[in-house]
Amino acid sequence: MKKNFLFGSVYWNNTGKSLKNDKNNFSNTKLTLSVNKIEIPTEEQYYSIKNNIICCMLGYFNNLEEVCTMYSVHSKNIGDTISELYIKNGSSVFSELDGIFIIFLFDGDNDIGYLYQPLHGNSLPLYYYSTDDEFNFSTSLRPILKLINKRELNSTAAKNFLHFYYLVPDKNTLVRNVYKIIPGTYLVIDVKRRKCITRKIKPVWKKISLDFAKNNLMGSLKENFKNTFKNIDEQHFAVTHTKGWDTNLLLFFTNELTKNTINAVTINGGGEVNEVPYTKEIQKSYDNIRSLTAEVHNNLDQLVNLAWIYEGYIFQEGFFLRYELSKLLKNENITSVILGASGDQILFPSQGFRKIIRDYPDFRYLLEYIVRRHCTKERILRKRMKKTVRHLQFDPDIEMLIKMHGIILNYHGVQSIYPYINLKTKHLSRRLGFLNYKKKFYIEKVKEILPLEIVQHLSKSRNVVDTKNLFSFDKVMLSKIFNSQMIKQVLSKAQIKQILNKPEDYHLVVLQTIYLYIFDALFLIGDYDDKFEEFYLNKGIEDLIH
Image (cartoon, rainbow, N blue to C red):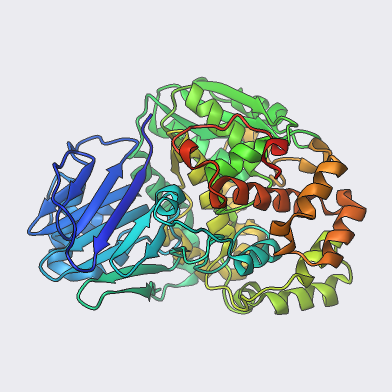
């Protein structure tokens, strides 16, 4: 099964070996590269070599034709196209490309490499690990771990992980000395200076009038969707479908672009979270819909395979639903899926005072206390957990949503497509500001586009999975996990006692702590290194307790 994958090593002393190259692998004295893609419509190789530049790309662009026209570049091979754009305009041309992608480009004449992702990041992680001899990077943690003899938990990162809930909100990972590229940044690999430099992506927002933003918001979405749809195999694609505004607009756009059968996918989140009846009614308004459904199962042991797939990058209760989504799409031979993810964050982006509240968590907690005068026990517990990150450098919600879908879908051989994530729509939304508070302006425009028989069924989609009602906890098992030496590196004795006394009040903290414990057992101890190539692990949580 094909999936997107990138692993490479750049040698500081040109000590690499030139091996036999094929469509997946390249090597010389300066670097080694291994690439794989879900789909290659026009290329024989996954990378290209031109003018002593080696280049590869994962993901998709939504404005490549526009940029190529601007610089008069006409190569058919995407790798050659990126190389030519680089030759004409240098590395600054990367910031003009929009989409969800990773570019690796190595300039052999200047001994300099670039690992670039767009402003909002990519659907896959970019890990890196450096030694005295080489710089290693990968979209998967496992090839990096194979290079490390003694692995240690980064307990500081683990504390930040629990405090911020979704992810570790800086360049650190749960593994000491292994790092990741965060959204809004890219890496420059300078071989001559034997160092890796992190640089910020600084978008330039041109001044536009409010009327221009009002008149062009929906057009930007439709235009971007058309450009994005070109990346899709129309015989093997699906659209996720909820009762929300965003996925229904995308389903409507899809129906305008193709007369082929559209696979519309809805997952029953369990408990009180079931949108299948709503989507069934909506789908009656179309004559070319094939409805696909599945249901989240109440099996806590799923956490083992979820940790195996996500490799500790994120935690979010919604990944139980994405697990069922990915398995369903794989079984249906779907290779691309259109998602409504991040519509909220793009259409009403944080800026000004709202950005300050988002980026400075201590200030946010203070405002919550003053305004709301109440918080859940779990929220209070997370707030009191020690953290070292005082200022967030990116939007954690967008990063979580992109990675929550992207990692697990890619693992199952499915390319995730995010039409709402594009710079034009974000630029227009920034100008609308509070006029589009809670997407009010956008929703009124959607009502003008969609037929009334569809609009009458729509409302805001909220939690997609009900983990509190799905899972019950074995208190004996919890006691073993929470009193382990590994968890004691992350939680204090008082916190452990507080959680174990009434775990149902802290069910997401409990799930995330079990997830951390599983990550340590699978990736740090080393007992499962010989299983790294296995797709799923036939293990339960009890099997991992040591």
